[in-house]
Length: 512
Image 1 (cartoon, rainbow, N blue to C red):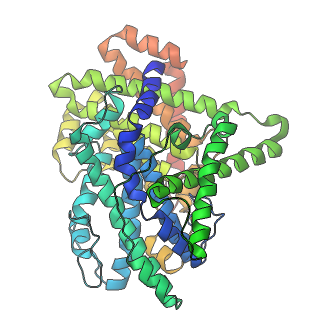
Image 2 (image 1 turned 120 degrees about the vertical axis):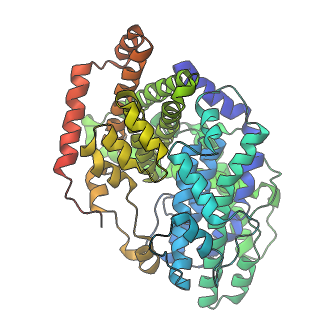
């Protein structure tokens, strides 16, 4: 399992130039739109995951979200990239809804509504995207439910760890790219409108004419410093800080030259790469600050190994899920549980990487994981019920959770999926807040010494289900895996029962 994990990292390096040619064009507009956000008052020191207290900050957060998705795409993590792209579609769809009054009708699907909303009056077509926005949303949603035409991206991620992306995979990645371009298009419109309202007519005209996607011609020589997860060991490496710091310094030089009306010394071909590096440098600074703050706060109680242990456990759980997915895939009758484990493996890795950066969209990844673990468990324990759920086009994650016998986890599922009230955020961003249930289940900020309680819970649940499925291939396999993870069935049952009871006790917590 560790070897598979290492091979996956090696593939990221080998496919670096190919994935840069696919993904860096999405960062074409980062410089001009980022400059516009700063001119309108966006803070340079805002952490990339933070939505910010002002409208310009919030628009800048939208730009940062595109970079976050691009990073996950370059790492061949389709679940995490789809989570970011989908939540951005949800977020930026709230603006045309509010401004145009095109509301979702009773009984109308979100897909049909988005198709209608984004071609409505006053909505600028998200050129060069030609696919209806609702269809993009549907494809991303289907992937997160472990089905649909984008599933080959998941199998590339978890099964074929030494294979390079094919032309078919590249075409499928365009769905995620197009969804990001739709959001970028609306962010551009919002920035132009904000500049116009402030009386910056020239800036508004410049922003309105910004091209969103241009073929990239500048490459990162070493993608590792830009892509690797923010582990404590990684954030303390001077080579990492030096490489990302150089990109950030170059980014500021270009911004300063543009603000002064001068021609930047750095050619436009490298701007997307510099924008990417600058974003990652801001992430690095935030994690270094958090690390030092907690080290001083906790003193002798500080345990750096907590994050390392959480990552190791996540790797063992994710890779075992990937192995099981491959075994199950060989049986035509077991394609559904195979897909479920495949999405678990990919989603858990993205959740862990986002958790390391304090990005709450990792909770969306965990919600995908809990649904798919429940799906796999239902297939193992109640195959007849699983077939009925699969056959129902209107099935929900709750159906799988209840099918697995985990009704008491309903609140956890809802809390992980809860998101900010987008309309409230758009109109009064300074009042943005987390839902009560999410605050309750999140358990406070991420800590390098004490792993995320919800992440630990999902690792444990997935681990136990993997062991149970391993038994179906041979009791010796399940026993061997349990020895590796150092979890026996009685202790596992006790921990999960405690989690179920805790979730059930908090079932009355409101989500609004």
